[in-house]
View (tube, one colour):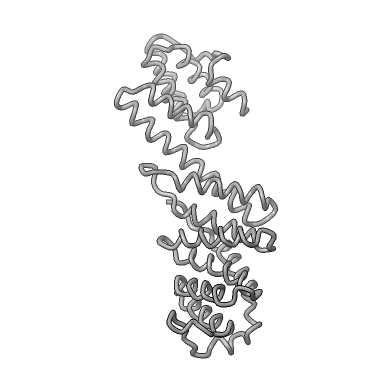
Length: 286
C-alpha cells in the first residue's frame, strides 16, 4: 500500500484549508465555541455562519465525513455566495481525510470544483486532492491496477499543470512509486507465465517493463527474465542481447550474474544485436 502524505505536507494542506476558510470572518474561536448543532433535518434556512461553525466543530473532533457533509450543505444552501466555492474545496479535503470509503467522494467533489472553477487560485489544491485520493487507493500487485493507472495520470497532471508548487514536488515522488508499482504488476504476471512455461506470455509482460518503466527498480530483473525466456525458446540472439544490455546498464547487479550463468548453459556470452527491440528500446531512452 502507498504511504500517506508526509506530516509536513499534511500540515500544508490543512494550513491552506484554514486560509480558505477565513476563520475570523465569522468571529473566530468565540463563534466556534457556541453549541449550534447542524443536522440534515435542520439544514433549511440556516445562515452560513451557523453551518460554518458546525463544520469546524466537527473538524476539531476529527469527524471528517460529517464535516464534509456540512460543507456540502453550505454549498447547496448558498450556491451564489463566495463561500460556495470554498465550501466545495473544504468538503473535498474532509472527504479525503475521512479515508478509505470516502476517497471516491473526495475525487468527485474535487472534479466538480475543477469543472466549475478552472481559473480559481486554489484549483491546484483540487487537482492534488484528486490525485492523492486516487493514490491512496493503490492495492497490491496481485489485484487489478485500474486505480494505480488513474493515480499516475492524475499525478502527472499535477506536475504538468503546476510545476512550481509543493504539490508538484510531492506528486513527482509519488509518480516514481506509482510507476514502480505498475512495473511490479507486469513482473508478477510475467513470472507466473514463466512458471507455466508460457515464455511468449512472459516476454510480452517483461517487454512492457523494458519499454515503459525503465526508470524503475524492476528493469534489471525484467532483462534477466527476458534472457531466461528467450534462452528457453532457443532464441539465442535475443537472449544474448538482453544479457548484454543488462550488463552494460547494471553491471553490478546479481540479475546480470544470473543472466550470464544462463547463457553459459550453451557456451554463449552476452552480445548485443543493435537491431533487436531490446537494444533499440534502451537507445531511445539512454
